[in-house]
Length: 253
Image (cartoon, rainbow, N blue to C red; front, side, top):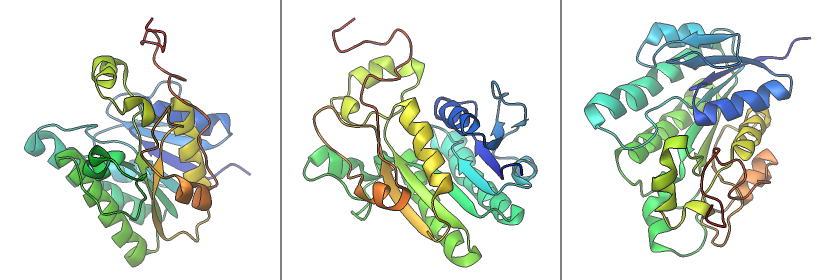
């Protein structure tokens, strides 16, 4: 029997490629959705999150949806965050519901707990109060909230992963300038394995928000115990495993 279809939005991005590659390597049937073609994926829709009909077509027949597509960091709210991360999540949630999918995995962010981490203290648990960094993180809080609503109202099984930092090739300087970066690093390999575990977790999970990072170098900022308990997932990697080619290594080269 063919495997059940998994839709990955944002499939051409840094995280999206890691997820698609891991799912394909495990023999899963994958469909992509992005604004540009997805390398190495035959079943890939090109479209925009603001186009409700395009999102609906992409979700048709999906058993599970991994939602990664979004403006990936703070940007102008009216022109970027609002259409892509707020209107887009509306279209995605409705398309997932109409498709009859059973599992939705939302890419949230460790930035929803930004100010606790900045102040230090014990590792942040998913149950801790949310203190989003700014508009991008606030939109992730919105996505988690509506995800829980759809879980309760429509019977979806929803998992929100509060991700560490899987840096893009153009983020080397920003990454190097942030003291905590190596401790919240999320390698492409760990990213792929995390999302596979989230897709395959028991459907008895109605809604859960969990933390997801690679193993820290020195300071543990995020408690991963709930992630292990619910998904059976633990990170394997540690910075600099999986860094883009040419990035600085621990010896300064």
